[in-house]
Amino acid sequence: ALGLLAIAGPPAPAQSTGGTPVFFGPDIRISGVPSDPAGTTHWETCIAANPKDAKNLVAGYFDRFPTIDLDQTCSFSVTGDGGQSWTVQGVVPMRDLPGSSYCVDPSVAADGRGTFYYAYLDVNLPPTGGEDVDIRVARSTDKGQSFPTSTAAVHEGPYEYLDKPYLAADAQPKSRFRGTVYVSYTNFVLHVGTPTGIFVVVSRDGGGAWSAPVFLDGPAPDGAFPQGSVPVVAPDGTAYVFWARYVDGSEPMSIRFSKSRDGGRSWSPAADAASNLPGTGLFYLKNADSKFGANSDRGLNANSFPTAAIAANGTIFVAWTDFPEGSCKTAPRSAVYPSCTNADVRLSVSRDGGATWTAPVKVTDETNATDQFFPWMAAHPNGLVSLAWIDRRLDPDNINYDAFYTNTFDGASFLPNVRVSTATSLLGLAAGIGDYNGIAATTDAVFPVWGDLRNQTDVQAYVARGTLGP
Image (cartoon, rainbow, N blue to C red; front, side, top):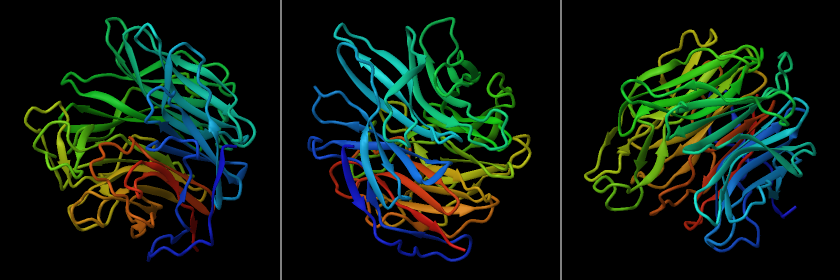
């Protein structure tokens, strides 16, 4: 283990009324060790709970060192006492190849046996130039104490670019595909003969061997491109993959999906869960740069990529970020992505396996024109669905941010939003805090994780335990 980080005190009640109450304990920093160089950041957080031991959770994030001659790693932190204390346990294995390497886009999941899986991009930069990339999946059979080995789920071919692999494991007790592991990702292909778009690979032996990639969706005739996929598994074992499809720099966008009823052997044609949405896939939000909105590439990098969860009764929830009350504009000399304000987290629900979807509803209850973005969701065993996101409602200048939370049974009525973070993150001129955050749900608790900037200098991974009330 690399270091014991913190011991939390008794949970403090959060201010909320109605819905299913939640009581959040103190924020705990779960990233960073004494050997980190000054200025090291830890972001793109993810978290999973052990279905066999609800007090055992593993959180992941990637590390960025300011010293360029250091390999860049992905780390994991572990709790065995339900989130009261966390230990930075180690880093996932990288290939031993000449040159330098970096790890990015982590995700973590656990199967019904309590085995944890950690997916990530392993990028090698050889001394001869170019890059050599694997989507790798490491496995832990000791409750996340170690991830000693990994396998290549996908290897990047010539003129390809792999992006944002995300992981799901079938831990559903009634699924006949229980134990199946799914990794979805985007492949940007720069040569003729291989399709560009969303793919998925499957392992049926605990991450030892992987299927050939299955193509789910590609560019639309109007140039709209799919990106930012996430898999999720229903109680009956049906697997779903969701993603955004958009035209760079312009509206509208759509949230799309495909599903498999046979353990990932075949997948349905891609379809819309929500369409004609007011937003695009990648954009800038405001930071303290006075040239935000006036020059290209100024502001905080953000996206509209979806998150999804499926309740115990099979109801499917999908959420994303768009701009129903906000606006986006392309700056002069723009490098494609627009500058946007008043982002909202919205959600749609399907109760018939994706055949029909409810109209999008706003999840957040703020009343000012501030940004809410980077949502993540998880389902509790009793059918409750928890959501957490990044929120700027407390800053009238719409720059600094907190982590906020709500929950819902039906996707129509929500717990009044609850502030999770006890200190506001001071964004300043920072252009990135990661591309996503995470959340895990157990029978009686919820664990949001997020990239936090309360120290004003470097992003760190934080978690808080929320205890569900009666």
